[in-house]
Length: 178
Image 1 (cartoon, rainbow, N blue to C red):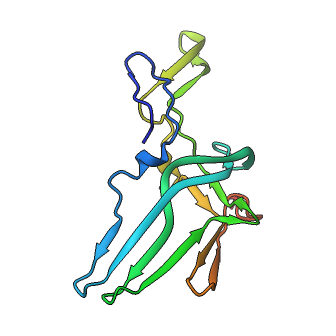
Image 2 (image 1 turned 90 degrees about the horizontal axis):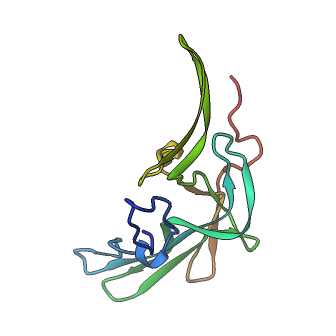
């Protein structure tokens, strides 16, 4: 969700920066169980420090941590029928830096040159495209437009579990010729 309302008939290049508050709309925040207990979910916006270049998927470092569209779990609170809470929090940073990598940046405007040959001869041209939806589908990343190489799950007693995943910046994870 963006914080700006655009008139796409006039300005298709309207700012579409993510708005964390508006992203929270219509999210599942509570599940109540027949036994009397319930679970609360708290979310936060995706954040990343690197982004993958289109078609190369080589991650480059951003100048600062940035916010992407979509949400990730910040905490899960399980409350028993006796009212006893069990809180798990999730951290997506390792060594103080976000482990998030933006895999695909929505592009609603594209321009460039094109050319080729036909039976009538060679042609060259310039194109400029605008669309209200991204011109390059985000689905090419299997629905994961921000991926994390590290997640820490913390428990109330101070213990934690660290999860490590291969990501675009993991040596040897890139596609190679068969």
